[in-house]
Image (cartoon, rainbow over all chains, first blue to last red; front, top):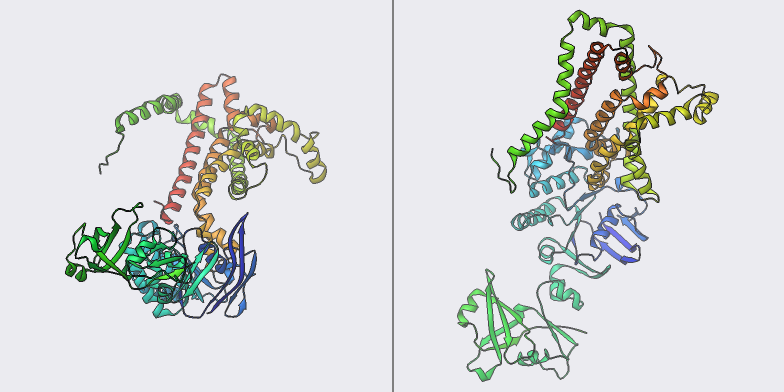
Length: 346
Length: 275
């Protein structure tokens, strides 16, 4: 179902958590609410769920205003960061809970419930754990059970609050892909909150970037990465080098072949992979040296600095492994820079 | 299985525990057993089978169970209010709860007797409006026991409620559970073991209570005479063996009841995966 938020405002005391949020999420999308901690993304998710009341504004689900409805009547599935599994119930009873609390008229009989619960547990590949208690499961297993529990009531919208935040890195990687595949299978409109831009880019079909209670940008991942609308988004999505035209940084830009006669803004953001590097023939050719480099797997990250500079600013560049080998660089070598693309902001 | 700890100290702590419990609990109680073993089986049945003794057993157990039940109910609500909601005067209320612990029980008994007797403030009101007599009836005993056992339930339930993961409630609500279902299926099952502990403590306290009860009970044989009073009466008549027999019987009965509550608790925990 589509979700429409209009003019959502929320204050906690004097602190304004959300300001005039307007957001439309089309049916079937998997949307990431992305932002630094304290930006209001979890509050927004809780307002959509009805776990928190907004001070003003409307929440519409499929064109129907549900602002005044209690969380239990909204037909949403909510997955919590710390799973919130019922610890006094078995895995089976946890997943069956949403079906068993239905009013008598709509409640399926126990046999139907059992069939459905086992089907869901198979979907999350954990049917063999059905008689365990939550305390006996690992974090990744618990989160998959929490997801199965939320899906049991066939929610029209699935909301996930930092679903992988409490898991360790390798489990998180697996679950991300798994969630994406699950969404492709079920097509239920889903929103998940994250502060990890990589996670948002990898999983979501649309990303909404939030900062200080406002929406900065909304779009498909590539759009946000390639065309950030402002400095915050550019810096938050992926690594970037920041150059201030009016400061000493401008020398870097000149060295890198950017003409500053008529700059397009005051600040230039350059992605590490947009910096091209060549080995300088002699030390006079360029004051920039390779200070250090790190192996990141498929790519190499280079730390560049300028000799005889007041500041010890470092610029990062990134290139494929192969290319780095061909350059045959070692620490302290002088290099020439070429900036292929920069984003300009004021 | 051997576990290594930063602080080693199993032997001295266990040693101290055994010595301490022996001195404080085991030796006094075994004296009780030895003393009553000096009587023959017939003598024993004679003392216990006495109608007045049986009646006071009934009074003691029924009033204690009734008081523990009522305290459990209201203690739960008090703990709930104290944990869940901020309100002015909360700290004052919180301090008030421990007061029955600190007050000498006889003072409590005298105060309760004064206000609940037929021409006391509360007693007169109840007498006039509901034709209800509290003081000098078994109801008076229940009132005294409720008073002294109040902190047990509140203080056992409070920390468990405090640690309760409220996102479980939110999860249940998001799955469509009504408020009552959230309470009965999520909150209560998680609190129940602690509530049972509070109940058991209140009950145990009530069974042995003497000071506050004797002032308000009226102490009518067969009606409102409790076991501890009967034991004291026997002692005053230099009937030491009679007193010990009653005491031992009460001890065994209470022990069995507490054991039953513990087993029930274990069963609940096991069923809910907490063991």
